[in-house]
Image (cartoon, one colour):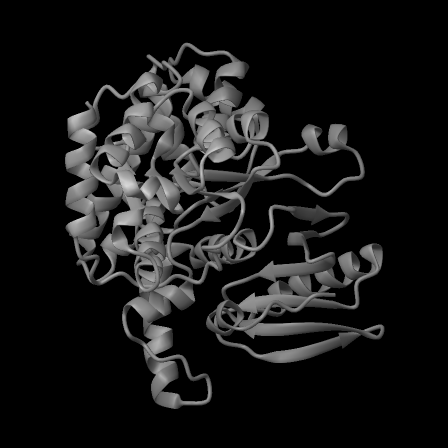
Length: 430
């Protein structure tokens, strides 16, 4: 195994990393902490590492930089005891480097059980900067929290934001230019349905759906079924289909349990809870609770479900153009979720799609594809007005397809904004 590590390390040192696009994440190279990048499969974690490595190579000898992908099939099966051989092999190649700072990049670390013990030891004892990536939220919660507490800074990585999507397609963003706006709006129509996974961009609809389907298979079988020893994969796949065809809707676990049971599945309510938790852990899905002052009350109410990428919906749902409001809402959720984990839906007499806490400020947002119908318009505005009054917030936003205006009510403002503009400008905070 040591000789294999030597070969992989040497091959990477000689490799040129071309065509890597810089993302919008501000990840430090000179932090004294272990840097952790966590997110769904194929969201671009490896590309971000390559971008960091390219930045480092401008000032650091490339021999001081080690990169390993733990999902490299040549390393299978990788065990905790093998990890010491990485640096043993490296220092045999470059003995003089023991007196210099080394940069170690470990991709998809969750493959090696107990990896955090190894990383903690080398971080504490060597002059080394460590960067790790993984496809499990548990890396940020249990594994890292217990073994690496205080030693790490975590970054959640998502598929391309709309701004990154436009950048990848070389579409200039100039909201004052009619020509630029035409390309931006056209890009949004594609992004809305196809999503932001880099490999699907510029592919036709059939190939894009095939790529996304393969991603989901990997998530279901490798990150969930294999990791959690699930044998009932038929139920897991059925739950997948249900969730991704019902994004941006309320989910009742009891109703779901009864529905699956009536279809002949053998399961308990705990099974549904666990499978949903696994999907969230793999960053495939997110659940959003109602805003209440007690966790017990939050738990009693249904949660809303959102997908990590709009493209996953089209794997199962061919009639996708019929309800663009749900796609709009999912995109707005992801835009908020990239910036905060504190997201709720709000409900008194009326429901508001999002109440989020961002930089200690409150954000209220409703999403409606079109508000030409007076009843729809009144419902959306009245819901925001009620929530602003209850939460003592002075500003809120209503995201639509085209309209742009400001509505004033009792000294408070509701900004009606087209989706493309909402995604490209700073979020208004009340």
